[in-house]
Length: 148
Image (cartoon, rainbow, N blue to C red; front, side):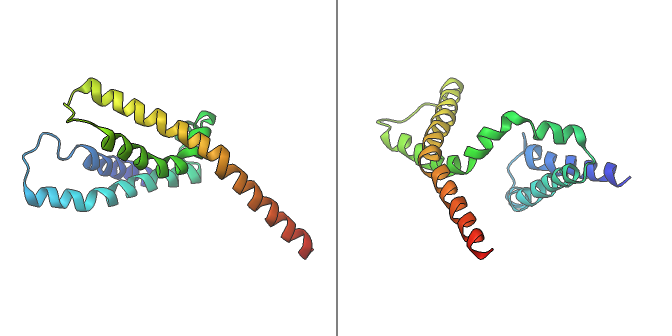
């Protein structure tokens, strides 16, 4: 019963986060409540999914989220989060004129930002992050060896 109630609450929280203002008239109070609660409700829903995966109550979901092909992008995600705003600002500051909205252009920008961000993140990770982590690991092992 708890599992069903948790999933129902998660679906309601996620639905609220993604679809509650879809095709709705803009009312200031409703928009303010939405903006004030969406992050908290999304966190509750996501926490429920994490709880189920950690306690082994959702093996299928755990297998999907633990897929081995998610590992390389997950290792680059921190570096990508640091680099992504720099890439966006660079492109927007280099623009010579106003951009017209089109779905094709937005898809092109999305693919450009995603690809370029992860390419630069890979290079930065190879040049700085991995050697620094190896150095910290090596120094940590050396200290433990001296104490024994």
